[in-house]
Length: 479
Image (cartoon, rainbow, N blue to C red):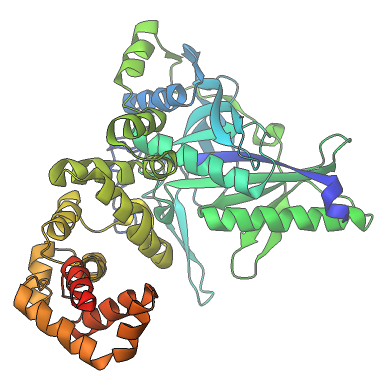
């Protein structure tokens, strides 16, 4: 009961890796998964005498993100040194932005827990370089430093503490991810660390000032973030109710244990000893430059949603799901354009495909087959070549070993039986074996027909044309 008198306050600092071909201050590649230390040079390794040169594409992508999230763009910005020591930070400082970020005072609109529109304010978006990565020896034999990631460009998107629940945080993060993918500034592959969040949580009695916050670092799973917020909220309430004080700390979330553990006391800005980066000039942007980027923004989710409802006849619910992911939306549009049956494509995406993604814990961008494959699957059903039940088997194959659906049904011998004489034979056989169902149907029990069709589908291993089966059963039962 005590928990009900508390309000949770959440702020998120989201780091998104930008999809530039080269790093922020040098010409090294940013490809994921290379052999350790093969995408490095004297600049990103911070060797003495090297100087950074700002990648112009990084500024463009950051401005794009700012415009897409309703931020005002600063025409006068600069880089700063954020000083701290860590083994995978070769310079012992990170080039970031302190008091003059590129983007300020934006917002993203989400639904709150009551289904009402709510604006989550964005304090700032700034550019910075990523650190390297430590590969820890699992047997306790030390750690190795991989600097491939050092200097990969990031934008940090800092929200105001406007989020009030784990579910609101989830909706905000998914909306933000969707926007970044639509404008194509980041692939947002959380499993590769392209999108990660620092989560700040505090609790307070509803009529009292905000409480002391704790921060959970570098989280890259929506599910884990929701679990961590719920746990940390409950932990803080228990601590306060027990008469203890919440300390401002940096925490680590253990997903297996389902608990947070302290890493260190939380640093403040003064601990980083920020000062202007002396080796880089100020960033000056013209109105024309900003306006040209604004004009280059693609159609955003809200606009697509309206178009799907008005032009393609989708429901608001279906449109919301489809437009929540750029990959899903592109797959829908491209497949629908080929097979000319947008509604069927939507149904497959929002039901069977969504179910498989959920079971396999995959993101939409990890769907392994193409829009042409999906379009062909819909066409095969529309032509009566395969039944819906066979189509579900084809879909499983597409996830396991993607190839043309027509090749799959040929290999597996799954082509639908639409020969009238063959179907009539099956119908008569099923009727002769199920006299009780005939009596039930004649007594007005409609479910008996469904049972008989099911038996026929079983005998034909799902290959019989269900429409023809239905019609033929009704015809025979009327005799």
